[in-house]
Length: 151
Image 1: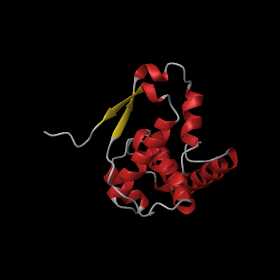
Image 2: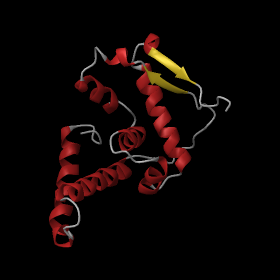
Image 3: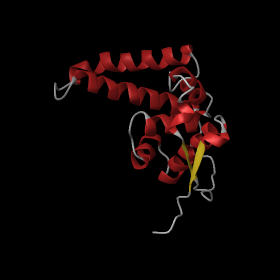
Image 4: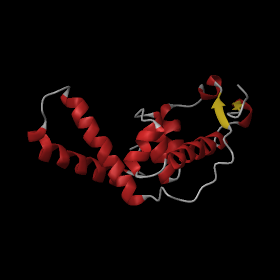
């Protein structure tokens, strides 16, 4: 659901992923865990779906590299469902980069390769996702972090 806007899209992603699993099961070399192999296929199915739906190469400016960190107590009144809902409201391309970076643990170089974009574009989409999520939370619960600090 992190990569889909509704259950119909999630079903399409799931069906495509399972089709790839069944078609490729003969190629599984039994190196590592089967669950890890399937997870990789599912992630790639999500990426393929998002690439077909979203424009990742929008012209962007890298002028503002200020990042925001949410104070832990700001999340005390939010449920996992609330957080997932906020993420689902992100623009498609930014949501995809956010999910790959935050949930899947990919770095910007890997995301850039997976999506066929530059690392700078990946960084911009993550920054944009964070900015949008920040506006959805109480401004008083945020700490500004300047990434241009000396040293």
